[in-house]
Every structure is written in C-alpha cells, then in structure tokens.
Length: 414
Image (cartoon, rainbow, N blue to C red; front, side, top):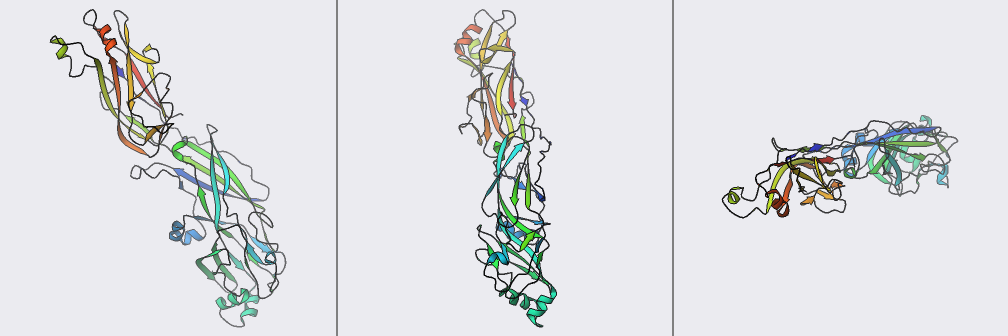
C-alpha cells in the first residue's frame, strides 16, 4: 500500500485594495508583515514595517520602551489671527487634542474577502512652532533664545501641559521650538501666551501611535488592506483650536498587512511506500501460531507550519468514508484505518490536540487544524491499520496480495 502525501503551498496574493481618500485629505501608509522565524517560534505577531520618521527616528530606544511608532506628517498648520496675551479660552491659543482612544479599521483579504480588525490610537504629538523673530526679540530683550521662549509662554514647550506628559525632548532656535508630548487621553493640552503673538505656524506635525493587530496564525496567507480616516480641524478628532488651522481636513491611514506563512511536510525517502505487518512480523503465524490481530505501520514525517490547514484522504479503493486495499484477482477489498498524530502547538477548532485522530475522505474531524505557535520541523506520524475482522477475510483461501494507493492531503486553503 502506498501513501502519497500532498503538500499545499501557501500563495501570497499581491492584489491591492484601492481606497478613495476624502477630498483635501492627507494619506499615510502603515504596513506590517508576519513572517515566521524558526529561531523565535513563540513570536507570532506582526512586525510593523512602516518607515519610522519624526520623534521615534531620533529616539528609537525610548519609543521601543514605550511600544510606540511615529510618523512625521507634511501637515502645515497656520494661525488665522493673532494669539492674544493671557487668553482665557484655550481654543484661542496653542492647543492639541488627539484621538488617544482606540479607533478601529476593517481590513480585507485581497483574494478571499476575509475580514479582520486593526486598531490604532495616538499616544504622542509633536511639531515645531515658528513665530516672527521680532516677537522673541521683544519678549527677551537681549536674553538668550531658550529663556525668551520660556518667557513667551511662562514655561518652555519641553514641559508638556497637563494631561500630556513630557518626553524629555526639546530643541530650539531664535524663532522656533521643537517639542514632543505624550498624550494619554483625549483632553486638550494647551499653552497660554504671555505676549501677543501676531502669527504662528507648525510646518509639520509628528504623531506617535500604537497598534493592535489581529492574530496572523488565524489568518490566510496573502495581503489585507483597509483604511481609517481621522478628521483634522476645530471640533474634530485632531483638534488644534480655533486659531491654528491645518492645511488638510483629514488624515487617511492606509493599512497593509502581509501574511507570509510557512507550510511544509517532509516525508523521509521511501516513506511513500507503507507495508502493513503484524506485531512482531509474519514469522509467528507462518510457524503455526494464531492469526494476527491487526496489520499496522506507523510512518513518521516532519511538519513546519505557521498556517492553519485541513487534512483528508483520497483513495484508489473506497470503503465508506475511508480508504481500502484490494486484491486484484478476486476484487475483494478491506478498509484501512488511517490516523494522524501532530506535534504540540497544533490543535483542532475546539483547541484539542491531534492525537491518533482518524483521517476520513470528507475531512470531518480534521477540517481545521490551527497552530498556536510556529511549528518548525516537528515530528509527527501517520498510523495505518487493518483490524482483526478484515484479516480473517484476507487470510481465507491462501496467499494473496492486497495493495492500494492512499493519498493523505494537507491543504492550507482553509
């Protein structure tokens, strides 16, 4: 009897999902990939591959510790009227309120239409404010620039106003000041001017974000895309007050997640030919002993997978929902019980281990096998057996040869 394993290869689709941004909207791509690493089988999450820019490009270790990423947006913000000294309403000065709570985006597989969820929240905001040099000269009266910036606002912008938190970063020149604040809540963080500021601008805006990704071990190989739009301007999700108005009314985040699964089954040389024999061999029966109680053989193989898959049988000779081996002369056949044992880390849809699980033609019981970790070349086995009742039939009437092809199918297209 021959068993011919079939390996289903995962194909990564590269069809892009097109989304139409809002009018006057700034777009920003955010990409991530899952690619299993044999040296780190416990790491089963996505890797953010979005190019880093802005604050985290300058302070990568700090951003890594805070588990955040940053992007510098070409979003310019300009004042539409002077900022008055001592303004009572925070909206009449310099303020930031960001989408610090989780926002949800649906992503769609480009080939199958499967959907998953990505979540994002802003955890930091930064920029460089610019004011006329004459303002700093008037305020400072000859003092150095850092002191003049502090006098203009009563404290420097390296110190974040509550409820924002300081990052430890600040940099300034004669008429500008660079800053970055952490944003734990969706409450405005505002600075009050001590002097009239006739005009002010942010030539760019940095934002830091955190991501919640789906579990790639439960996802099909391929590409998932989707988008999320953040409103920008007074009263919107990214709000910088009523004086500082942005060049764009929205920011559209385009998500692209690539899932690159590994799926491989290795059968040793000659392993596709399986000979069923009694326990201890045929010699005892040939020497006048009792008939064998079973004919069986275990065939070991190795499996590597980060992908869910299913298993089933295809048969040359059919016996109900399983395969059979047949005798050519008489046409008589007997069923073969085929079972599979898979390594730890692979379970069925109910979370149960696959241990001596019966394989059937319709795939029932093995219609969904899913990994909890990346399984890298772990040993597994197939068990083939003919039971006592069938052996009685096979041994009745002299020497015969029973054979047949049984194809064991591993299919990652679940």
